[in-house]
Image 1 (cartoon, rainbow, N blue to C red):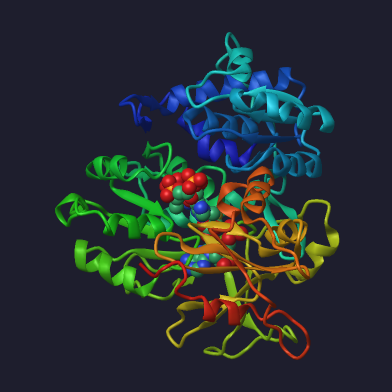
Image 2 (image 1 turned 90 degrees about the vertical axis):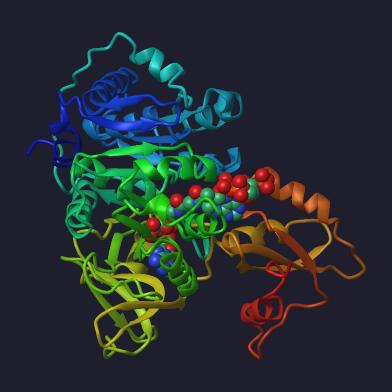
Length: 505
Ligand code: MLC
Ligand code: AMP
């Protein structure tokens, strides 16, 4: 095949009048119209001198055009690098520079703020907004609506997705065409998606969940998506009667359960609800079944590996577990100290191997070697076990990571900012239980002798350089951080002592 990912997910829909996207304004885009848009974008990107293997960093709103950019990159061999729309200019600068992106695509409203970033990195700046306007569509207007697909091999790179590092700099996970395609093929089959499915899509499309799991599956199955700009409860409740399936982070499900309009009748016709990206509380699983009669299907994945395990479609979907290794994916549990495989039932480090596992971190051979073993197993940083029935359970994380509403926050990055503020001696950032987001960020500060840090000024400094979801929801001033006898900060003590901080009514 000339370009496995393009041909399998996209190309075979050429000429198909069947709907691909149902939009919030009531309009529908057919598979064929989407591919014609894609081809015009591919021409425009070539005209902007982007060649196969070049990186295109995109910080753009969720829209059909944004998906068109992804497809155009796949068709023309450009490596797609989607970015959270919440990232500040400082954050974007790092990704553009580190990846050596040839193009930065952003919202026209952000062009002024991001032009210095593009210029500094020698990247072309193009724009696209959620209505489909901007300099990219301008350049694409009048271009042919077919594009000669660039040949690629399964091992060629399709996307870079950045994941933050526990020790500092974000790492660009390099994903190949084969990584993405193998996972989509397995999941369509495992979750029984067909062209009759209509997926309610309310996730962002700059992460694995919304882009590769949800979108790639629907492209492969040939079905359609109700494509909402974000998870807005009114829009979701209104759209559910037209959907057959929904994918979401746990916050989607807790928000639905909090809404009296979310009834058994509203979703009686639904075929499947999938949850992932963060732990689904067993109580949410039970409450959801009590309310709707549906059992949520929980699965486990990550940026570097796409999906690893899933509860079964038929058979018991067990609350508190993430199910079985997917076909073709091996999961083992190892001793975190020695790396030796542990017997079934014992808790240790979860490692995974399979065609889904990424190629390594961009320009970081040492980091890659630390996490990706020569035998192909990826060390996930998640702690868990495989029970006597073969279900994988995640019991904790060896990595210092907060997952807030499905977004990852690395405490180190926030601590570095807090430590730099006037009057701050040191800081510790932890995730505390939050009723809506699962966990939320809280910062603990120790002042320098006789200093009184200005908490408002610190919040302002955070707003300038960090995306909103990373901002501490609360800043607490302490005389000292709890430490063990080795001098290491005991974050577990902070988490225990302040467990009710964000949940108390
Ligand atoms: C928004 N805010 C958040 C936040 N999302 N703060 C912390 N954590 C989050 N996740 C901020 C907003 O900017 C806003 O700031 C305030 O919190 C309240 O916002 P909101 O309106 O209540 O939030 P909303 O916009 O509705 O977003 C919440 C959400 C969203 C849960 C719907 O975060 C979301 O769609 N999350 C999905 C993330 C995801 O797709 N993860 C997949 C990663 S892939 P202010 O200033 O207005 O108060 C992966 C691999 C795998 O992990 O296995 O899938
Ligand atoms: P990311 O780096 O955004 O890809 O986040 C991946 C991490 O999310 C994993 O390493 C897990 O810690 C977590 N995760 C994903 N799915 C689940 C799940 N179903 N249950 C618990 N944690 C999950």
